[in-house]
Length: 259
Image (cartoon, rainbow, N blue to C red; front, side, top):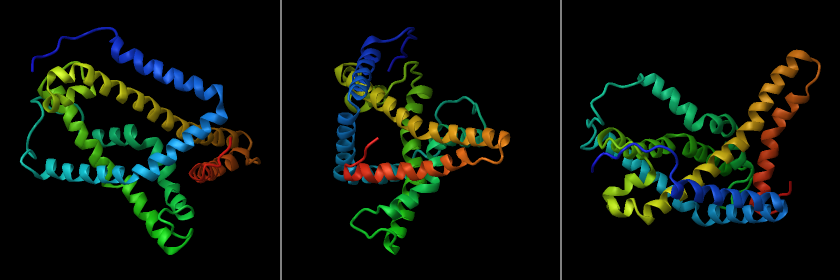
């Protein structure tokens, strides 16, 4: 594959469709919050209850793929000839800061309690089985499985960036070996890129929605407590926030949540 020339500005077919889609969805949500809440809860319930098994198997497949990369024939393969830009410790801290910082701050401490109080598979809440399942799911979400997914997919991007020397990196570029350069740069590749951007924007929105109240609550608690030690207003808000969010999730699962 030939090196692509550096392009400046924006590419309309990749920039504007996601912008329009996200704008329309945001407008519809703000226009009727109750109807949007019903639709979002229905989509959430459908995806988690119908396709949850596919998500779990996808993570398991990524874990085996990660083992194949680490211990297989490409274990000693180096991507590029340049020396590492950062030390190993710096890379580890950057991965935690960019991938799981907000999520692990919130879910790392309360996720097990969510599954204990609302266990799947018809288990009784607060039972021994619910506690065992809560611990298992916490390890599933914060153990080696998500990191295997991150690292396995990052190798594909790293290969095209450091070996193929492509200066324009997008998800469709990694599909060239599978579908060919013609399809990767055609309509199929454009659809993949647009879908990726829409999913990325909403994923970031979810992270900000979960993390912003928590971070601002911590900051407000520290500042307010320093100025007014006798009051516990923000301290109670911070402790109550995870409980309120768990109630939202349980209500959304039943389709009864209201703002």
